[in-house]
Figure 1: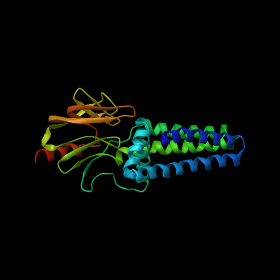
Figure 2: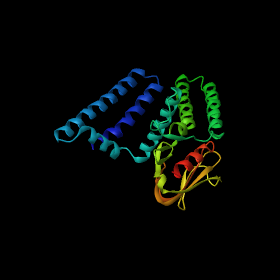
Figure 3: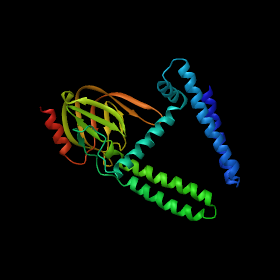
Figure 4: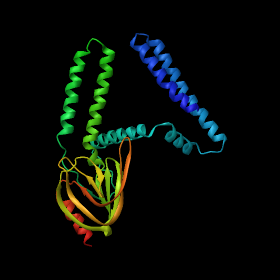
Length: 266
């Protein structure tokens, strides 16, 4: 109850501080924000003391509170943004993909034109708004921050498949949808592997016993399975889970197909 009350009060305090700041009342705005910070740390300390007094684990309890208090849609949005920002950071630092050390990476296909075009539109829009709001420095600064963040996020989506690719670990193929695990299966379960040209969808999907993980040009690899495996695709609003007997995905070249064939013939 205390946490829910705090979560209701904090947005009101932040909105009040922003309103005061935009109206030139800088000092009152700072006071309100400092009060909001006090509310946060006092609430954290109070809840932790109550949890500890009841003999419960503080960290595990905060995890449960986080899951209970924050809607799943918000958690998924935050998770997606963290993954995108992490991808940008790792790419900028030239760090390898997030896979086990000896894993064989199925190289993702080349980036399509949609995201780069969207990225260019963001940059142009940011420049136009910067000129339009030149008379309002505060609004100009806020819009500049939002556009810089949007550009970084778009870059994250652009490089995310390279940082969270499909990969082979030992005798197991691990397939991802975005940064999340979608399905995995051993090569002993594979019946056949072949090259295909499937452009029926350009987004991850599972339907009719077939899971698809396409690139900008659709799917290029089809893997038939001897027995069904579970595939879960997590969207912002819902998770779709089905049993599939065929998996289709995209790869940059035929090396992935040859490697899969070699492993399945062992």
